[in-house]
Image (cartoon, rainbow, N blue to C red):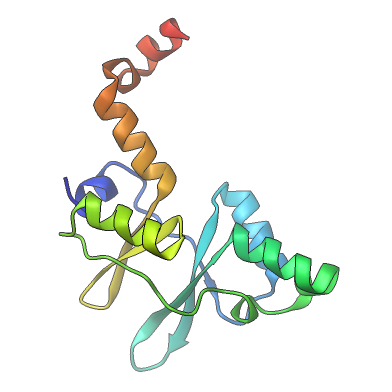
Amino acid sequence: MRAEDILRQKDSRVVMIRVGETVATAVALMTKEIIGALVVKEVCRTEGNVVVGVFSERDVAKALAKHGAAALTMPVSAFMGRTVISCEPRDSIETVLRLMDENHIRHVPVMEDHTLVGVISARDLIRHFLQQSSPALQDPATAVAHA
């Protein structure tokens, strides 16, 4: 099983935010979309959208702990992870899990030739492994009957 297989099983839409947007805007977007992280982009005239980081719920917590409510008016760039830890579509799930474990992250952008093609979250991997281990979870009607 590879990263691209996980991406095929989920919604392909990736929610992004610009590097200069405020933490409040990021929190509102994550809340609206019911997600735990946003890919941070910088618009570059010659290259289009360039992925420059990931901004997560953990970053929100750290920002609020350090700056209180004032953090909400600050840009996500002040708190986001600056090193983009990513994988490629052909990477194994084990590689993605290792990246998450070694870097203490829960979201891994999937890049192909420097182009963002998706994001794999810890939740995506949990869902995949649960479906593999329990046939009842593959059919929602059966899963409800067992609940």
